[in-house]
Amino acid sequence: MSDAPQTSNTDSDSATAAETTESQRKQQAATEAVQQEKQARQNLKRTKSGETIIVDFVANFVAGGSGTFEPLKGRVLMSDRRLILATSDSKTVVPLTSVFDVAVGQVPPEVEEFFDHTVLVGYVVNGVRRTTVVGGDRETIEKFSVLLYRATLRGSVVALKHPAKVGGRFQDEPVREVGLRLDTDSVSFPGTEELTLSDEVFRIDLGNIVFFEVLERTVLEERRLVLSVQHVTQEQTVTTEVSMGSRRKMNILGRYLRQMYHYLVSDVRNLDVSEDALEVLVGIYSMAGVGGEVDLAPMLGLEAAELTAHLESLSDDGLIESVEPPHDLTPQGQFLINERFEDINF
Image (cartoon, rainbow, N blue to C red):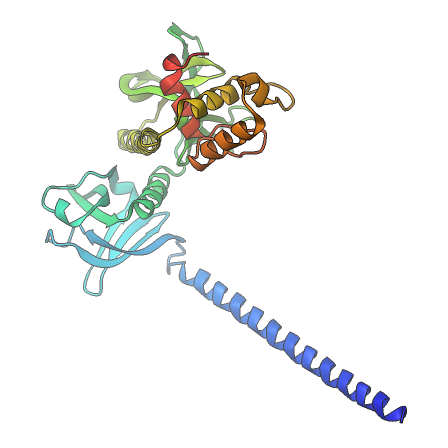
């Protein structure tokens, strides 16, 4: 009697082991298939010339060479060298070195009825200026425009003077040549392999900008357009000046700054922030840089539950990074503080 169950269990264990092995084999095969498919997709992202495709989506557009104002539907592809708008019948190729303007939301009147959110690309072909308009939802257009700005300015070396002013006082700082990186909420100036600024990357957060304008002056012994940016840093207003030898690139950099700043400003101004939540935001701002964790509730005269509710509201509105300390301000939160600073009663 006792031998039969043991034999049965052994057979069952062997069958289970076989099933496990087969399951593992199938899982491994599936994993390999996924990896092969992923590699195949990555290979498709490279053109015959070795370019890497960094943008690939379907959209409606009016291509500069189409000869019609009626939108076409097709693929929008972009490498680090060119922008391609392709349909089953046509293809428009825009070398990025020919792009002189990138304007978000500016649409020729002939096609404005067809689009809600757009990127207009101005470029030159055989000495003739042309434009292409790509339409889509705001999120798609915002992401595409940032990638387009980056691609057109990739590898740029800029002449940076920081600070050019502290308050209203001019500073005798040298002009230094550095790199350039664009993000949705900041402009960074890292060193390059040949040119270094310092161990720390200097950055201007868009939420800290007070005012900016384009001037013309002599930089590095040549007349250049100069982007003058006033921004708040370490609780004081400073001015940073940025320039490049290429007017085409300076125009694109100015466009980028205006557009990203517009996105940030419009998002913040559409928020309905209560005065109590605003006081909490000011409290967070005033305690920035203070070592250790500060209990904001007694400092602001609030119960712990009230403070938590305000922090959750500020987090939901995208004004602070986290409900848990440290409650760092986002660029939107910093902009709100800067804009309403004079109206806040400490």
